[in-house]
Length: 254
Image 1 (cartoon, rainbow, N blue to C red):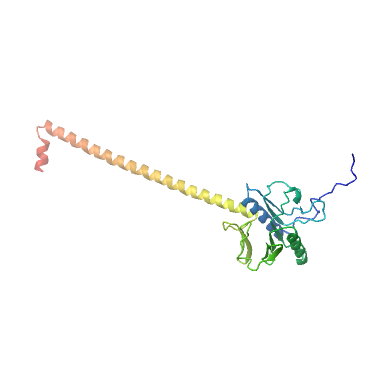
Image 2 (image 1 turned 180 degrees about the vertical axis):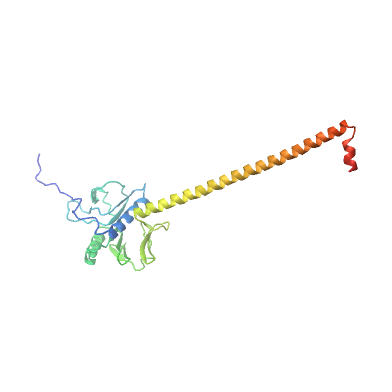
């Protein structure tokens, strides 16, 4: 039996680039990459620039946060985040990174969207001014927070800070969020440092072995000399006895 109802299409792309420049991209990558690492192995879905459809049957109601986190949803591939297929769980945390093509009006519209559809935490990052705006849900509203550097994310346990006048995100263990390249470089430095320490330990161990061997040889030489002196004395004593002289009388008389 054929149906006259056309299948609803939920596009997975709008054909636009994910980021307008490398600065915006670096922020998106380090946010998504670090959060995925933080929540690896847990029921937490983390994505970036992924279409989120909160209402079934309404493909026109859609947005694509630069970063989103959905607790209670498994990680893995998504062409888009269709909320009704995700136990109707809205992303609890979203990030937006300002690009030169964005306006604050657009960001206000996005904030209103997130407020309406259940986001609990919204972080709006301006990488050009090194500033962040933080909005936390209070009832039905996302309320802007004043002390952005004194707030810990209720869900993520991350914090924002300034280091050398640059805006940074701090993981729960205090480590700074990094791009993947920075992370790889740090890991390579750690590997090199480990190799250096291992080499130093091996050198110390080798020096200890050499020292022990020299001390052993010295002790062997001293024992050899002592044995030779003892043998020489015994030969002399035997010679004296052959001549009818008691070696003990010589020792007592000396």
